[in-house]
Image (cartoon, rainbow, N blue to C red; front, side, top):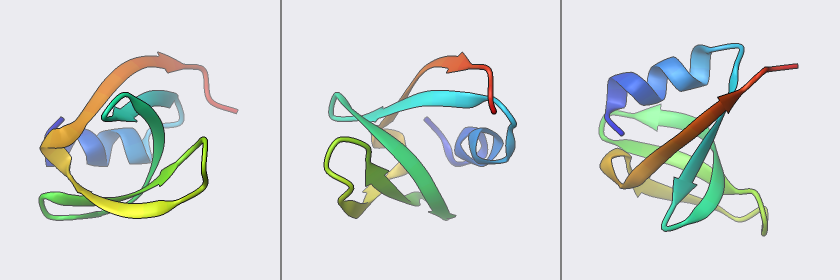
Length: 62
């Protein structure tokens, strides 16, 4: 992904599948070319480079 797409995903009412190294993550913050994410399986928070995030399909938001 790129920073602009990450920003769009964060602001959209649709929930998107985003993965980091194959694991599903929730994007919490964007800081330039880095994103703060939370691993959905473990709850662990960490920073990643935006280009390492992979977008899946969107699902209707709640």
